[in-house]
Image (cartoon, rainbow, N blue to C red):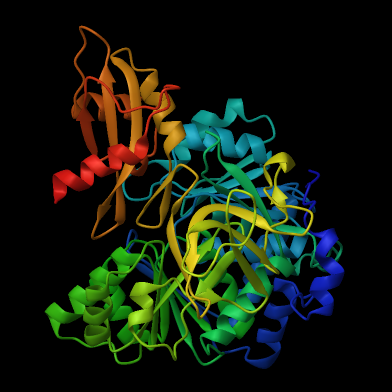
Length: 547
């Protein structure tokens, strides 16, 4: 497939000259790990769903990547093809990406929470040739769901089942046979290695258009961010990185899969969030760094406090996805003994800002940090003029890590001729250049770090025969940061309740995490003279009720 990553070429010369783009791919970094520390631990994957631990050294990991790459080639995958996966955190996901990078294939991770509605769009839009998924994860039959979608996906050639035991299993097709020893293996593995400006990752993000957008990244955009991020946090090859945030999110993918390879650091993966098991992993594996959204930090601090079993190796917990309450920073600092670092970023550019390990603890709760090296930010008004310090405006980002564009949707790229990307967020900066996100101009709710596509949920509710009008807004919650509330005006003579809303959205195959957790039924919704619903007033109603 042709990838219209039109935002890469115009900034190549400047990014190289500034030293931000290093022209290295994951293949280069992995080769260095094998050369420098072949027998050191590279990857430890804990599957709570299957009660199993898998371990790889760097040499073993590279060999398995070669094996799976040749296996993918046997399935017809060539450079530029999209390989999708709906996998939990684990060795299958990590190895699959490394294998795709051997071939120049484009890796497309999708969240395990997605169901038919989201997947049918994403896999068709990406023209995925192969999709890898578990037979069952957390009691849900992913392989069965994908088989049901296959007739509507003409580009899809193979469904590969991780941890399956049939002819279509990962073991049978990819990881079992010693493909890397075949006479043509060397030719396959070397003939189409991707360049640093080739698209290597396609990842979908929810927005306000009603359909997910396919974000395209290259090695240069991804690694320019990771190198700066690791440098700021003083991370290196002796660190042990725990990733329990989903690796189908940019957070897990960039900092749980890619960053350990860049550093030559040991990655420890956990597929299902269980704070007690996470704490045990930190102790057993000597974890020094982890990151996640506010609920992860809350849970880990609580379980360590309640158990009394400390996690002395942990140096940094980076928290992103929602503001961190000041009380939580203090509690977590005391419980974990680790520095709490706050951050803000997007799928389109990775981490944009972080606080510094050297900062006072209060900055983690009062700011979202300052820009990483290679990142510039502007706060502008409606006329695109810079606003004074402390004044809220639209947040623009120009960064070495900015994406290459939205697949097949260049008109939505939101980037001007000077390279400034309109994030759709509102923010302000203090006198020291530290950012604070103040809201979102785009209509998205962030629940526990997961973007909820408000327009899509509203559209489905409008189709319900009892619904005349609907508006979904966020309300604050201490654990996930935000939850979704649906305000509904029923049609005359119809009733509408929470059970009916949930049942309807389930029937539409909506991901469970997108279903609003609260329903308020009204006879009318506040609106402008032009009839546009005033969502800020709905938010004020919710805040007033909780006061």
